Amino acid sequence: MLDELREKCKQLLANGTVQVVIGYGQPAEAGGVVPVFITTPEDAQQLVWNDQCFANLTKYLLRSEIKALGKAAICVKGCDERALVVLERESQIDRTQIVVIGLLCDGVGQPRLPKCEACDVHKPRAADVLIGQPPADGQPLPAEQRYAALAAFLRKTPEERIAYWMAELSRCTKCYACRQVCPMCYCRQCIADKNRPVAISTSATLKGNFAWQITRAFHLASRCVGCDECSRVCPAGIDLRLLNLSLAQAAEKSFAFRAGMDPAAEPVIGAYREQDHEEFIR
Amino acid sequence: MSQPSDFQPKIIAYVCNWCTYLGADLAGTNRLEYPANVRIIRLPCTGRIDFNLLVKAFEMGADAVLVSGCHPGDCHYTAGNYHARRRWILFRQLLETMGIDSRRVQFSWISAAEGKKWQQVITEITEKTQELGPYAAYREICQAGG
Image (cartoon, rainbow over all chains, first blue to last red; front, side):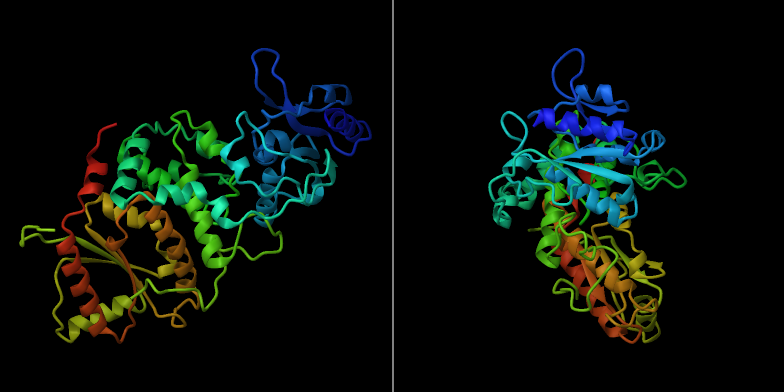
């Protein structure tokens, strides 16, 4: 699979189809995997594909310095591809100007990441190039399985939940890594940086941290594709996934919508139905 | 829950300019009495009501928040309330997960002709919030040091 990936990328660069390949590479020192930006056919040898390829690379497509390199090819797993669907829907990328290299994925991480345990998109569905063996038939997982982590959390009482978040968010240092890594956080000016007047309290106290995480989660409502990069990069180890899952579940329950699954689906926010439920409104 | 009976909750009502605000105005002109615990904040439309404002209200010491606008179909801007309703559906789930007391976040449709309904809703929310007591958890969040 790796040879196939390197060969394909080499070709794409050699025949000028793309000027840059965004993929995974091995750092010279230490272990793990880092994003690499390959611009010459010879360098395609640097590409790797292994169970450490956690990152969702789609964020890089939005960066001006990457755009400046020319037409890009990007390596995506099935989960990452969902981000491309949302970004295209929101006019952030031009799909015709991107070559999508789909990597058939059976889950990453040792042990497998939580998102991989609940994954039903092992195969990128709209990739231009598919690399790897076709997987066993990918049946959609039932919702109970995909939201199991959230369901377990919601068994706590509301008092236990708020106490949990107070303990967790007290560790947040407002480094904004969750925002920087998120493919859906692409605003030129984030509301968290707005200072005249201040919209979100900037202090890294519980007050500011609640305001920030509520904002971050809600701005991703019905847009988050569940790549879990925010949780993975959080230096304080806050399980932000739970917040994203809760909004994803609400969108699925109320509007039968899963972000990035169907390119033709009408978005939840920005559209409406007269018969949307309103039993909670007086 | 026993609370001192003299607890006067602070209730912030974010209302739309065209329906609920006029409904509240009508309650006033009709001399309908309702608790003075409510602070009305008028915005153009429920579609404009950013959920950050709800968080802000709690930060500023609100014990309950009401968001109220035109009935479906009556929006001055045609569909602002429909868009708002979708966001509320999602936002309520986030509140649920965070353990923020959803009894303290209320929504209503009150038209310009429903001065009476405004009186009822405000009275009910005030009484309910009096039973719930001050929103101690959010106060604690706001007072915690960094």
